[in-house]
Structure formats: C-alpha cells, structure tokens
Length: 176
Image 1 (cartoon, helix red, strand yellow):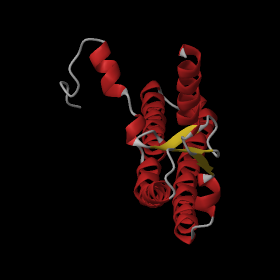
Image 2: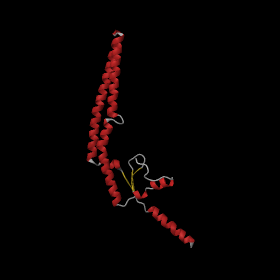
Image 3: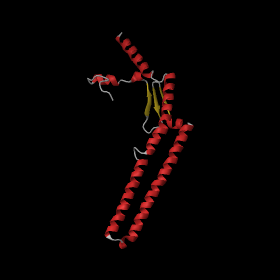
C-alpha cells in the first residue's frame, strides 16, 4: 500500500513540475519590426555623427596647433613657449571634456538613447506581459540577449520572501 501511495505522490509531483509553461521571444527581431525603434536609432545615429565630427574637428585643431608650435618652437622665447604649450593643453582638456560629455557613460548619447529607446522597450515588455497572462505562460525568456535572460516570470514562482524568512529576516524590512 505504501508503494502505491509513493508512486501516486511521485506522479502528482512530476506532473506538477511539467505544468509550468515556458516561451521565448526575440526582442531584437521584435524591435527591428517597429518603425518607431528604427526612427529612434536614426535620430541617435545623426546626433552621434554630428558630435563625432565636432570631436574630430577639435582634435585636428589641437594637432594643427601642436605642429605649428613645433615649427615655431626654436624662434619662441621661454615665456611665449609656455603660453603656447598651455593653450594646447587647455584646448586638449576642453576637447576631452566635450568628448566625455557627449559619449561618456552619463553623456548626451547615453541619455538620448535612454529617452528614445526606453519607452519602446517598455511597450514591448508590456505586450509580452499581456501575452504571457493571456496564454497562461509562467516564464518568458529572451533569446536575443547574449546570456539567456528571463524577461517575464509569474509572481507565483517568486520565493524571495521564503529565502529571507529562512535566513531569519523579516521580508519588506528594508526599503530600497
């Protein structure tokens, strides 16, 4: 009798484990199908090219100044030489600062990308969430990312609070 109960228990837990429904999406493919995404990428490319031209102009100006300084260096007094060196150094600092402002991690390009692309990505994420709920899917993965990334998970499978309790803490005690 115990054998039959054990087998029935195993069958129930096995079927329960396979009842989860998985799906995947290719967000890169989805985004490429959206005209607003293409438009946003074009806007970013135009801005990036303009800023890169300005950066290139700044550095070619510095190069020109340096070559002129080298050519005139023999004829300059110490005071004039120092002044020209300082001008080149200041111009180079300004050019590097401009480059950082436009292309750095907190630069204009990064912020423009976030402003233009994030609403489109949020729209896709909402659509994925709606489809997951309508098709009773538990997990959706994104196959276009380098490391397979879960982009939707049913909250019924979140055991974070259970882990916190197991560790001896109270869930929700710390606010982000």
